[in-house]
Amino acid sequence: MRVMIALVAIAIPVAIYNFWDTGSTSSAAPPTTTTATPAQKKTAAPQVAYNPLDPRLHLRELAASQSVKYEAGRNIFTWEAVPIEPLVASAKVPVVWGPPAPTPTPTPPPPPPIDLKFYGFANKPNEPKRVFLQQKEDLFVAKQGDIVKSRYKVVQIANTSVTIEDVLYSNRQTIPLTPK
Image (cartoon, rainbow, N blue to C red; front, side, top):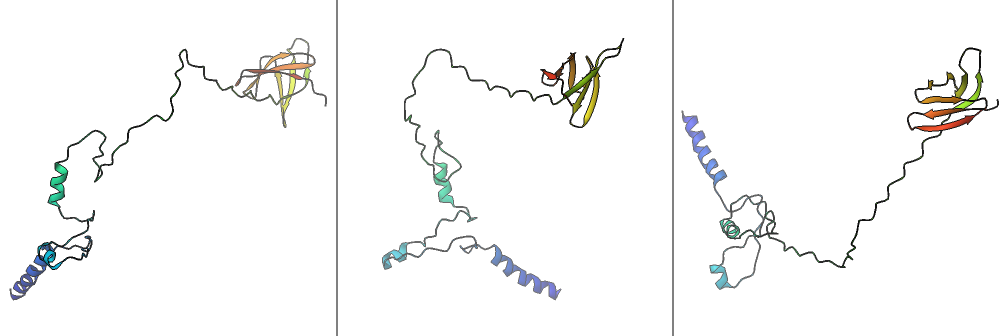
């Protein structure tokens, strides 16, 4: 019981010390020093610089801010409102009557060229003509109406050329017979 009484006797002064407002906190700015006459020293209160991190409630500033009325253009989130200057046109824009000028439409890029080579054809009796096409190292055999490589359709087969359509771009190209 004696130990408990001793602990309470120590805790009460520590609690009073921690919660007592001594006028200075660790976040408050140090007081500013001013030179004053002896008559001013008797009547003047110490000056403390404004610190936005000071956690104390300043009733004078609160009362002053409550008396200010909101006006259009005033920023309510700043301490002091910055006056907004009206926009002034620096040069007069000529007025043009009539329909608006058409905006130029960008031209689409040309479709990529068909990179197939025509090496010849095979013609057997009672069978449709077949063509031999090459793309890089790949060889294809197709007849009229077939689609090669899921992209190129064989439109027409002639003795010296073949007409191929790129189905992705709707682009037709005639490929001449290429000698080996």
